[in-house]
Amino acid sequence: MLQKLFYCLLGTGLCLVVCSYSTAPASKAPAVPAAARPGIKTIIIDAGHGGRDPGAHGDYSTEKKVCLAIALKLGAKLKSTFPELKIYYTRMGDTYPEIKARADYANRNKGDLFISIHANAAPKVKHTKFLGYKTQVYYTRKGKKRIKHTRRVKNYKTWYTDNPSRGTETYIWAADRSTIKGDYVGERMAEDVEDGEYVPDINDPEFKAKSLLWTKRFFNKSLLLATLVQEEMAKKGRLNRGVKQRNEKGIWVLQATAMPSILVETGYITHSADEAYLNSKKGQEDMAAAIVNAVKRYQGTSAPQPISKTTNNSSTSKTS
Image (cartoon, rainbow, N blue to C red; front, side, top):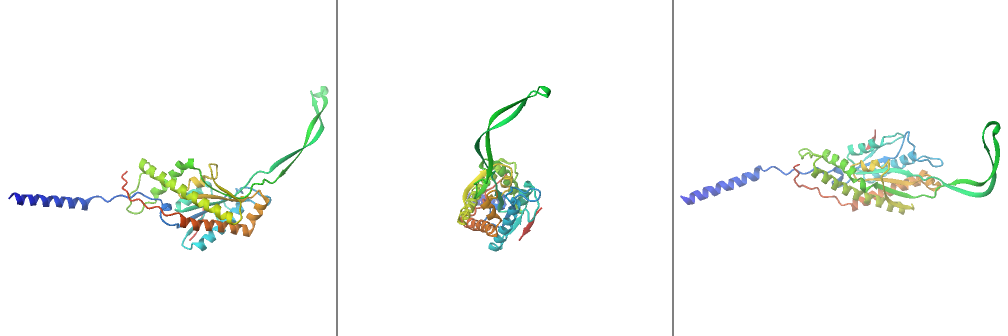
């Protein structure tokens, strides 16, 4: 009798264990931004300035025209090299999308890379030469009491020459702005959930920590791509001014885009040789080809990040 009771209790226990496994809720995977998933599917190309904003001025050209010409050639070359890619442009004509609108457009179209094209500028260099002394007339008092005086003053000749600054440099967002970048990455992570996925609370501390982690990964990817761009530019004979960080207006597009982002200062439009190069067909083709080659190397070097499955309870144009 005791033996039968023992087997009955044992069988009941096993049933309860099996039932508990079959009815346990499935783990909820955290959202992962599309830009962190394997492969590059979408690239956003941003031609700087445009419309009412001409950007920097050279002797005979403007930054907005040079940026657009290079951006369009870049898009065509990327599409030819990677036919499966979707290429989006923040502008394809002489228009001016607001800076915030450019970033919003990139995020809305779920870009995997953001490449902004610009041209740099530097003020002319002032020169002075002492020529000697000259006589200067000046007056004291007023009306009938006015008295004329003369004095000897130094005499200088002043003239300006082109600033010698030239070459190419690429910017990424500043590391001390990662919290701002993390906010946009978090918003995109929340938007990129698929059907049936857990929708995270963007104000949850754990979620914020994860968004900052992805932000750091995006920073590393941006630094990698920027470095490769500079290397490819050097192969084309350009002076390599390196990869830099900047917090000023205009770099908003880097910190507000929830993806790896770079801004390429293709050359100094205020330097006569650079201006001629940037306006030439060869120069524009070289710039575009260098960036395409960098993207090729980036795809091969930047290993995809594994997607975590841990439980979490808490105006514009396109070619495709």
